Image (cartoon, rainbow, N blue to C red):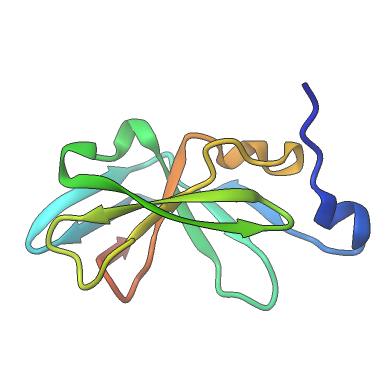
Length: 122
């Protein structure tokens, strides 16, 4: 079933790019590694800084707890959030579990707030 973005329909000039990140990304909180991936994606959406999305398979979900918090992006869809053990604040990771068609590349990927966890990208 098609799930097109209403945001792109209303604003066809909007551009969001998703490309493979060429290095390894490590996310840690409270001294423990939460995620490590050589398969991350870099999402670029002006005017925001790029965001690294890590495949769910490279995230240690035993260190996360899903919360009831949710937000909506007119271009990506509904975001779910997780608390991360040792993070500096709640809802430190988010993911679009059922993104709009145009953003299907980020399905089954999570992103982390850099002010709540430590992100090392190299």
